[in-house]
Length: 391
Image (tube, rainbow, N blue to C red; front, side, top):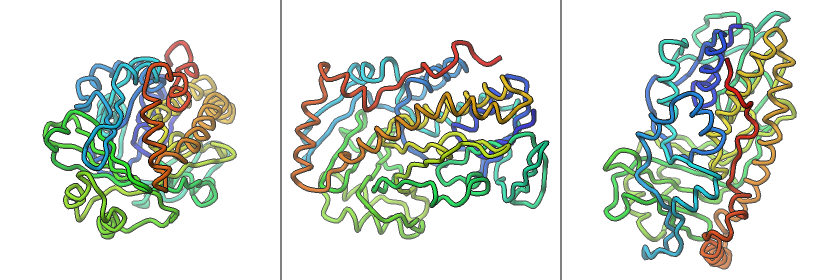
């Protein structure tokens, strides 16, 4: 089976790996150039961790962890008001985990398919024409090809989904937050811990990357607007929203790049079905969780794995394969989306009273006796995976 995967991120590369291993011919089209483009940190555990183990890439991931083993919550003066250490995190997540840059996971996955899977960078799809025997795809460079199946793995703003299912506005559920992030130099005393500083309506997070001397600053703030902010205006928007902010926020804002600065709304995608004809969606394209879930990358890998497994189990019946894939993963994604929405409501309290209550609750929650409650919000399980790897 010849499968076009639109999107060379975590979900797409995972799917390509397992399709290739099963004897199919995946082709990946990725609009970005080769190499890392910047990114943010992730907590990698549960289902994704197990898939990485089956792929034999855990050791390479473990060689590039973030330089932090704990999370500190601080006030405007830098005083620690709460702390989450690694042993408690592992209890919450039901086992080992890795704190990684998202780009590290993508790079290791790219290495895993290198020389085995055709990956076309700076390429994207423009048109899709479905027939009984396959999918005709016209690319942005006006070339056309036929494939047996098209997989949309191109993120929350998926072009594949737009072509096959309609405009994003039909399926998007905005959670009322905007986030932005970019790299900054380490700050002395904060180069080995992930630090959260919250104020009413906004939060600043700083954490070290896997590269000595470089950290990531992440801004998360309440925002009902769903408009995409032009890149040239993003730094100015952050300075406006965070005017008068405390802690190290002013100096971090002063280092905002004038060009490339990632900024987006926290948006979930909810579709009635994850497939249409010979087109199927995986990862954020069909079930975006947002960074508030702490499981986005893990379930993106699950989508790629389970779709490849289903296509292998039903090689001549993509409709049956898509039904099998969705039946196994959709309940998990829907439940996680629901939990994430509930958690997001208290993520950045809008008022001083709410903020004070959050600080108190945080101090009370971060203890072993409340692991079951924390696990309900952040835990994951690998029970959705088949007991044996795809062959």
